[in-house]
Image (cartoon, rainbow, N blue to C red; front, top):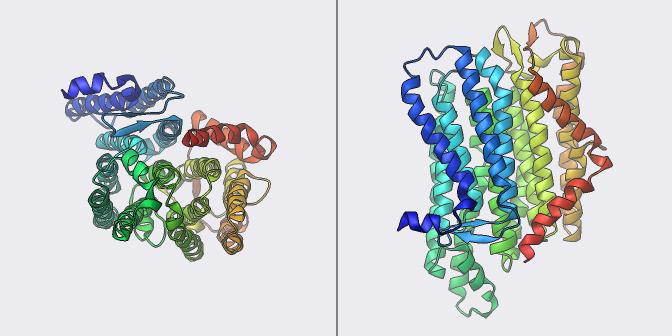
Length: 496
């Protein structure tokens, strides 16, 4: 019956997920034999990485089979539409880029653990299922599949006490966040008698005819718990405490994956909730997003000013950027969807550039750790210094770079919702954040500390990625409509 249900429920729409599952199982099988091979051979590592990149590219091609579709699958457990397909495509592309930028790093640092590849693919599968979730059980299972992989990836550097400590903290706090999602789901089931998003939407569309106020309060409490769990997963304040420790404790290539890939999946499911399932009662949750946005921007920027370590600085910067993304949810306007997606796409591009640069810098054959390690980088590699500075300017929102426009569009939606205080505060935070970014620029150009900073040979693929991303950030202001028109099409599907 299960197989019959799968193959008679538009199996072709789930081919990408099934294909990734097949890749995972194949690598698990191969891993049993791989243990007996001399795993320190660089050729094997390169071959495996290249094979994974090729297979993920093929998975991306499979995604193009499922365009302009809007339908539920597996008895309402999953939902496929253009928005989910777009986000899943971004997830796959980001994972491919993470594999490309980390290849040289793992060879230089002799990180030959085979299990890491399997865990990254499992987390990717979990994120793809999360985006397509249309049932709270599917949502919870997808979150757990992704989270369990991340816990182990954080501790993949087993000889590092810092990594083990970070993984333990992440596991404990992550389990609490998952329990919030589960508890919220149970409250919602108690109120609605269903866990299906479609059924809940139909009931909420008649919410003003429900006379029992206790039912409405129960539903609001349930969704509040779920939002708290999701805020934890994206690192939004005040549920951000785990993020700096995990960034610092995890190996650099794993931290890059954490920073680049998962956020768009969780933002995608938040879009599904706020602008689709809960559209009739979303005004009740505006205050939650408002408080979290302000807290994230303020705490992220203020804490980043005090950081001396690069990864902790990037962690707090990430928290601050999540606050800017949440501005789009406070307005309760459907037209904010393309601007939210635009912001996170530009943020991903900036993150890829920064992490590609970071992974290529070493001191005494070890990865750089402190901001002062960047001293005098301009004299060692002028092009790389220019790329880092350009990304830093874009992250702080300096015009006419892409980062400025991503913030501007979100500010416009908040102005339409008459959140003038939020906009004023956001501008102040942007000015505050420019201080720690300018400190990084000062170190790169003007500080001369006697440390033997060395730039690893950047591969051709990494160079191409850096050049394309940098050109995008530089020249986005010339043709912003090329992207915005396509992003607007995605949110129009939610209106149908």
